[in-house]
Length: 263
Length: 267
Image (cartoon, rainbow over all chains, first blue to last red; front, side):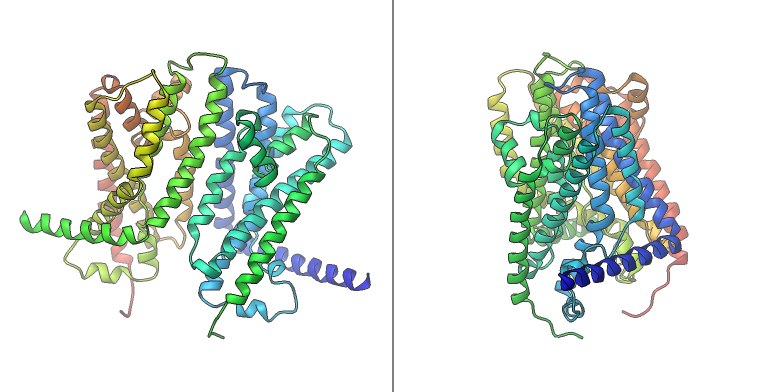
């Protein structure tokens, strides 16, 4: 138990250092910070505007009205901004480290390499756009219970973890294929499937996106919790654990293949 | 004249050969665009379930529009232009010593790359197109004139898109990072180029504003011209030519000012 607490405190200190370092970086490169901020708010606004225009024309989408769609949009924006702020930049660097043989310096440290890599590069500018998502949800949800809010936050966290683990899994394939930017872009495009209401898809695709490749964790599941349609998210945790284990297996197999003559 | 054509043919041929080596990247891009179109198809299918038309579009014509707009956008994508990389790492030197203008070389290289993309993705696109057209019995027809207009406006879109990205890349003469403008453009075109829905869904005031912007040529105009050639007025090609001239003038200005600042050493 004591060992576990010690390990946790090490990771906590590591992430505190990362946050401080990235905060100073944001202060040093203020233009980058504001540009990131503008881009993300702009991206979030475009998705909002899309749904706004659509619901001006059709009023209802299947069983969905505008308020419910805005809960989906808000959840999507929050998860996407957290993903870009915390995971995207750090994990995207992985193929470069593998191809250039720079992973050595991480392998030598007495800490989990994956924990060391994730959160290394935090983009605070992207995180701020999540506030727009929170605002959308606050404006379109009514009388939420504490239990719903806790569940909602947990679902958002699962959505963020899912994207991060999948990105890590894809980037680990660089051990075999070298540069794999296309796979990262593919994930970005696939995320569009998760930005649409689950009800629009036929049952087969819907089940696939709930239980096999749970892209609906990004926005649909949190929106269902807010609208009182879903009460348990435990099964999704199990799916996420399975994906995490798969990513661990690929990472370990990749490490066995890794060779470098540098440093 | 013959030597100019020979130079262009050489660049385009080499570029096609080089790009086809990385055809798996083209395939990935095709899969990515298909995923996006699948999401949009099911979304709009549900949207149309309660009504026969939205802003004058049936589901078939609406989705046909989306396929054409996204296809046109993909064909006009200035992949691998990387002007800012050449400026920042000093490799622009190599291009300055060649008997080609940097802009021409990069453009014809891109042209070859896009032709290679068309060749590599042609079969999947044709299969998808045939499947879609045979499944949808009515809604719209594509005339030979429509196909010609689609190709002409896509070529216009390619030139515009190239000049936009080239000019953004040239800003690296002054700024360390100009990548953000590419990202902004990528986000903006989803709506400004009509990749998510045609402009007819937008409020009239926004529609009329969009009709003067260059982004419409990256998706909306080629698709619209292909489906309903008669609705493309005389104003549209003039706006296209004016935007190309404006962006080309901007290129000359940025290049002439920027090249004076450019410094590099070594080989």
